[in-house]
Length: 234
Image 1 (cartoon, rainbow, N blue to C red):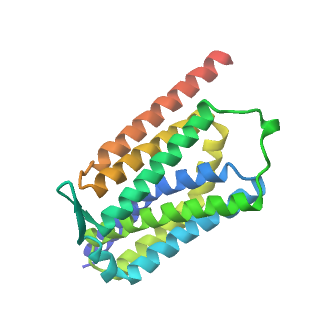
Image 2 (image 1 turned 45 degrees about the vertical axis):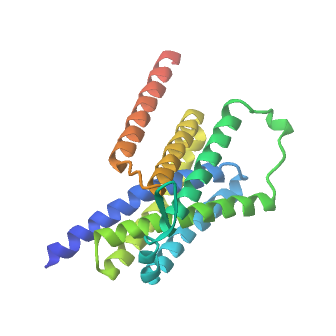
Image 3 (image 1 turned 90 degrees about the horizontal axis):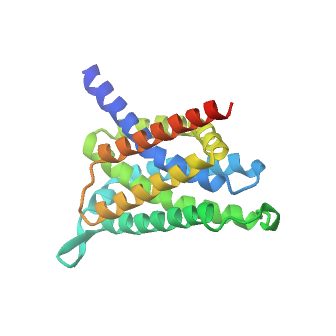
């Protein structure tokens, strides 16, 4: 009996953390654009809202299940409520990551000519985070519903995973901020996730294991390259 509770609970917590990594990377990249005193605030609000969305969606579980019903058909492809949200979120993530990569690699300007971040910028960053929070939350909750059938396990897994994400967000954000090459790599990860969301919305399932293996391998290569560069320069 205890085994029937612990295994699904820990499996769902692990799954929620893996799905939440994408969210942390996105929030970290946006937070890096703000003054240092506003970054922690943006991370707190971004991850806190992610938990709020997930808990609210769990409360409306019957509505979430209905999102798998077909709304309309385009070129013999059935578009569901979930699919429409994933398509919009995927396109937004592809656009945002492509735009950020362009600014990092092609359109970099002298810091002296850059405008200082204003309060409106914080609101803009938070709005973009809310949009992605909603997309990731719906995907996360539908995945949870398919994995377990006990609501309290879903609530516990969401709360535990978000608390872990909250503590992990600052070290991840600091690491990405200190290493520009990792920032570009993280943006490439987000682009892949955007393509995955778009494909999933159109019923073309890309196994998550392939995506995260590619991410882990690319990260390992980048870390090895960074260590090699340090040894040659020292």
